[in-house]
Image 1: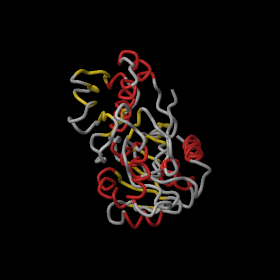
Image 2: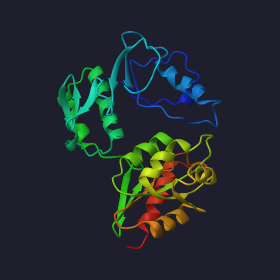
Image 3: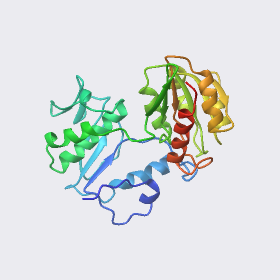
Image 4: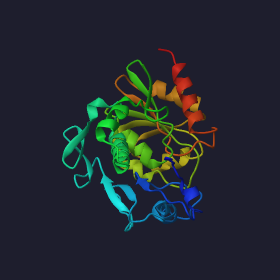
Length: 282
């Protein structure tokens, strides 16, 4: 059995690609430097299901509006009670029975709960028992660059979310925070606006430090919603965040776009952020 992540770029040219189980976690505008519209990007992503047959399984987010699929559909959602895998009383529930208690896992945030749901659904579709799947899921450690806690300095938490390369990822990271946020965002211009995050940023973020090609554009999108500063580099952004953040707040590095204007990759970007934070004085 092969488990693969397939990009829209790869799906553009498929002919015989036929997953027996296909997972659709979510959709958000992205790569508009490649596609002429959000609709064209979405159409490329939807080719994931193109060669599936009635004997296959499509695991999809219940809140997503998708076209009719030939495969048997299994739904999940941390936000809706009308899904096959749903959230109830601190547990992931399937067929009205709890299958995983959230306090047993090391993952936090509703987005990670949905990731767990999708994983359980895929295993169930393969015939695995929940009792076999739960222990490794509970032992799973969050990966680097995905809301990774770096350190606390003077009562301020520093979080590396460099993997956030689109708006949906930033939204999920912000929703997972319970403290006021100083947000470092920005990077390569992929052709989309940060305007959709304006309301959430106004609610959750006290100040923003912006970097990269999109810095000025993001500042315009969020003008009047939050205090913004433009940084000349990631090192400058970390220094500015360190000077701005107060005890009881979070410095969240969640760029919202790709890294290639300034870095080799999101991992290189996150590694540099981590090193800069580790070098800050107590």
